[in-house]
Length: 367
Image (cartoon, rainbow, N blue to C red; front, top):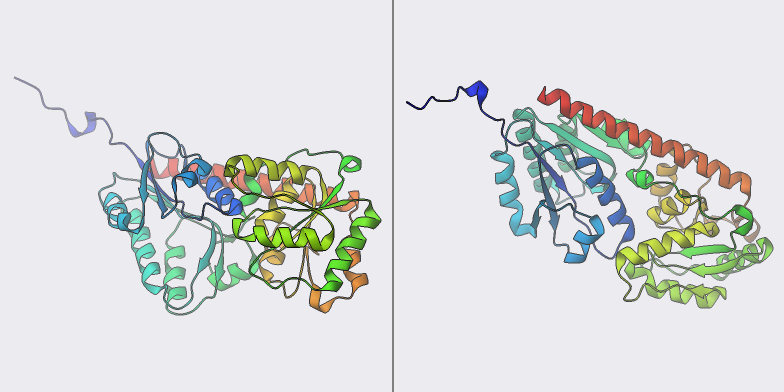
């Protein structure tokens, strides 16, 4: 007669981690922070389920999804995502994507879905992780729903103090992009370039801005080069190269992973990088270059995110500054570069410690 196995002798069901990794393939910064989010997720369970939204095949390569990952693509796969959450074994892990959270009107229903996901995981004895994020355009009822969901999550992180104050829960942490790893780059005396990368959707800077950048580069003995970290900015980079008398690095048909490494090599050789793209400045800082946001009417996003790692004076409003003040903020010094490197290294260490804490929380939940 066959002997039945007792419940205690049965092999445990495989554990499962869910991670959201949506984003446009034409944005190196978005790929960067989603890839770092994936790194936080990998190894936390036996099975990995990733939702990538409408992203094309190249996006999956940019993320570096491991073989065996269950990849859910397009909005039509959301019901399956929810079903897999519902039937998941005990102690699942849910990792939301890093970045900016829009909480303006019209996002209440989406936030209800995220709240439901959070509740499902908590009822199953699982762990919910919200990597460092920022809140954009908070409004009701989306904000209240989001606050409730974050209070129910074991790990809730915000990349700037302003967002933390809005959320009223969680804790401050460096932007997850700072976990991408510092690079030695060239020695300061061997760095020969001032790089510029501006959003194409914003107005072109005026003649005073152009003059300040040209004069600052000349005074420091640096070549001007414009680079493209987001595809939609390519025309603007070409235009700025002509106006500044600099060189233009196109993205063109280059593979995104090859282009990303090329960009990081450019940052390795720069003394200073001027941009209104947050993760252009993050990658520049990781390479030892001095990050500067010098544009008309800058948003507080970059200022606040760098302030969270102890770096002040990153941003300046070009419309409220004369040529002399703009030239001053564009003076590259090895002392400032050393301060930048020290702060971003410390930020990376904080993020590595947070990742260890998350893995410890998962182990405790399953003990």
